[in-house]
Image (cartoon, rainbow, N blue to C red; front, side, top):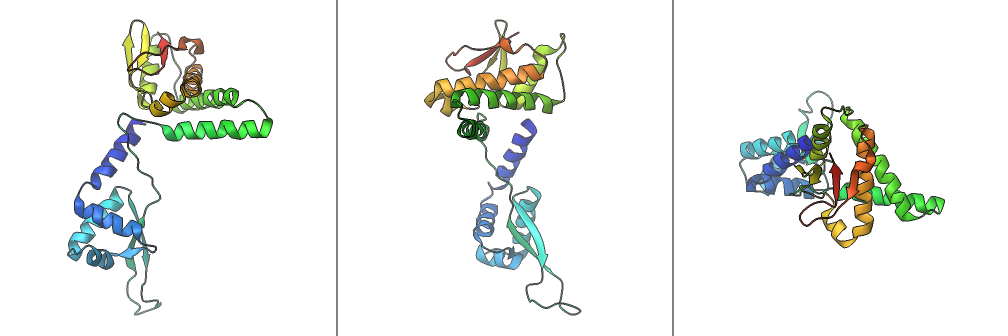
Length: 227
C-alpha cells in the first residue's frame, strides 16, 4: 500500500505542471484517441513540447497509447501509423491522511448482498466480510508472526494500510483511521467493521484476535491492539 500511495503521489505530481494538466484534460475529454498534432494544436503548444509532455503522462500511467493510420489507407505507401493517446483506465486518488473509503464501500456492499441473499442481519454480515478481508490482508503479506517480532510485524502491516501505528502503554495505537468520515457519521457500524477487519488481520498473522479491542480516544482510531 505504501508503494501504491507513492506511485499515486508521483502520478498526481505529473499533473501539477499546467501544460501537462491541459494536455491531460484535452485527451481525457476526447471521445476518440488523439494524435500529437491534435493535442498540440488544441492547447497551442509546439509539437515537440506536446510530445514530451504526452509521453511523460504515458510514463506515469495516466495516458495509454495505440498506433493507427488516420488516413484509412493500407498497404505499401500508406505511411506509418500515427501514435495516438487516450486516457488510461488507471484511477488516481490521493487522500492525506490516507483514507480507504473504497475498501469500506466494498465491504458494506458485500455485506448487503449477503443479507439480501440469505435474509441475515446486515451488521452480522458486515463483521463477517470484514474479518474475511482482514485474513486476506494478512495472507497477502506472506508472513506469520513469531514471538520475538510480533509487534513489529503487526505495526508494519497496519502501517502499509494507512493506520499509522504508534506504541503507547503496552498498546499498538492507530493514529489514523482509514474510514474516518464514515466512522464519525456511522460510528457503531463502521467501528465494528474496523474491529472485525483488524481481528482478521491478527488471526491471519497467528496472533490472538482478542488482542484487538474497541477503545475510542480523541485523535486516534477506535481500535487498539494489546502488545
